[in-house]
Image (cartoon, rainbow, N blue to C red; front, top):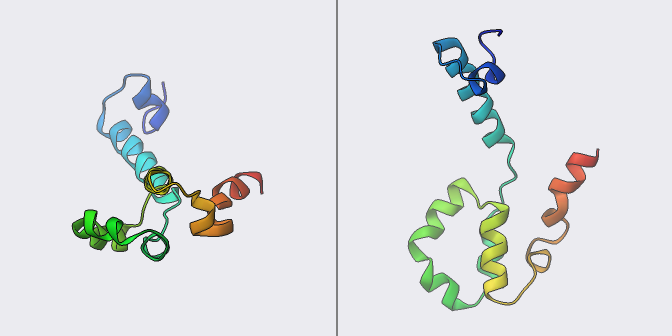
Length: 98
């Protein structure tokens, strides 16, 4: 087993080097995730959306929304996320092909 690798951590090693390597891999994966801005939702969804999520909107403005959050909110109001975000909705798929 080679120490200092995330794969070693997954294999059961809990030395400091392997823990740090695993933490780094997790943080890099989080940074790569596609985030969606909240403003298109605000512009596309009814006033009810703003009232229900008043407190959360400010946090979403700074950190963005995940693809799952956007999908859940759009389908709740009966619209497809593509109508809100256009081609950006599929940009994660295009990035993996390129």
